[in-house]
Amino acid sequence: MAREDHKYIFVLGGVMSGVGKGVVTSSIGLLLQQKGYPVNLVKVDPYLNVDAGTMNPTEHGEVFVLKSGLETDQDMGNYERFLGRDLTNEDYMTSGMVYQTVIERERALEYGGKCVEAIPHVRDEILRRLEAAASYNGSRISVIEIGGTIGDFQNALFIDAARVMKMNYPDNVLFVMVSYLPTPGTLGEMKTKPTQSAVRELNSYGVQPDFIIARSKEPIDEKRKEKIAIACNVRRDRIISAPDISSIYEAPLNFEKDKLSDALLEALRLPEKRKASLAAWKKFATAVANQKAPEIKIAIVGKYFDTGDFVLSDAYLSVIEAIKFSAAKLNVRAKITWVNSKDFEKGAPVKMLEDYDGVIVPGGFGESGIEGKIKAIQYVREHKIPYFGLCYGMQLMVIEYARNVLKLKSAHTTEIQKNSEDPVVDMMLEQKQHIADAKYGGTMRLGVYPAELKKGTIARGAYKKAAIEERHRHRYEINYSYVKQLEGKGLVFSGTSPDGILMEIAELPRDVHPFMLATQFHPEFQARPLDPHPLFTEFLKSAATRSKKS
Image 1 (tube, rainbow, N blue to C red):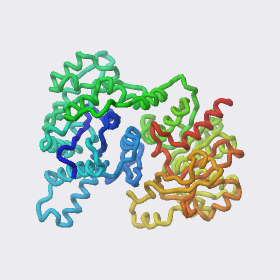
Image 2 (spheres, rainbow, N blue to C red):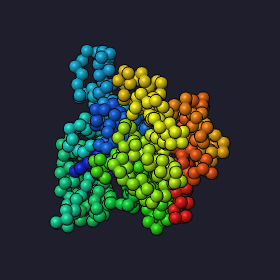
Image 3 (cartoon, helix red, strand yellow):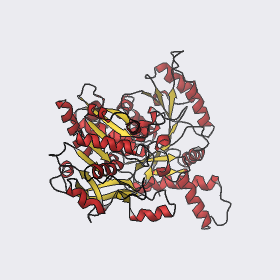
Image 4 (tube, helix red, strand yellow):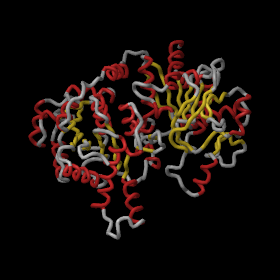
């Protein structure tokens, strides 16, 4: 278990959801890591889902897959991107996981016939998991984001577990509350009352915040800081201004202006090991925010558009960030436009894609919008517009090629057409039994798998190595029975599993198309701010070349 002198920082949200707890947690992790301390970040999701894999992306946001294959909340992606390293299963927790463990122990009589209750048994399992995460990671400081908003019924047990930890280790636990200070348009004055109310709500749990991160449209002034300090019993120098910014990657730089990392170390009674070195991060953040960089226009052709524009960035979050990282490296600015593939099915002209420098078809599931995506893929192939397909985007690229180049007009995926005459995309063998047994959660091909790359291909040139490992999340694969036919007509499977059975990357040669490449895996999951993914970078290079020509 974790040492008794291990330090814990709990991040909670007040006033409203979506206030930015994940960015605050990520930023704190980055800053303390830069100070020389080993850090692990933990996301607590109060949902009863055992993992995030069964959650609807239009409601909950992207499902982020860890290296191990665990399907997690999108905040885990931000954690990995800010820290620049992979996280572990121990760094993610849902109510479903906790209750499942408690119930399994009860069924095995591990509680010795006691009445099993939320307190203490569920709460103690939460504490055990937090300490186990610290021990497994060998960290000095754990930063734990408790999902939801203060006052929610669902996260009350997690807050109580944090309270007990504070009681057990009073000098080693801090509470950081991320709150929101609205400025109503009719008043024109920033209001602190919602934050005061959120602190009182937190006090009712027996918890007092040590720091308040004050989210607001504009930086908060000293008058508001003083008002919050007096009303909420928080030191004035521990009220940190967090105004709206153009990029989340500016957040740690802004926090350092208020010397947040120094204040946290002081509160934790830890010495400063070194000055935070943020030069590389600042250079990256500046490049991301550079509005004067040459613009390249990227269309993302997807289907998660039916509940309003506000969900788009969440449903495809890692894809968007991966584009930003490669764009910053190339000193260009990617302007992303969302294109609903269903519009092409209703008669919208596919020719509109001519206005873009590159087109991406991201991952997804189901029949909705599929024919519109295939129309888009056909157009960009025939008109030599750079194309990058991700997971489903590769499967549909192969279907389009089979239909229009091999002339297999009935080519399809058995996900949509079970009895297809030409199932060029079919369910993986081991997956068929899972479906027969109605085992849907956590049963896809998940996590890191190896692939080997062919010489002389775009993929091999981008990676600059012969073997790679990438993260997967799918049940369906390119049907090996059709590989020779497809290759005979010019499609190149440049990446395959080591045994050559599973097709991992499909592409067209450069002399046929400037960039027509798709992956069965999700390269966006391994893109990092300071280490962009080579395939995204190569795609944007081709898009930038097209932009210059036009």
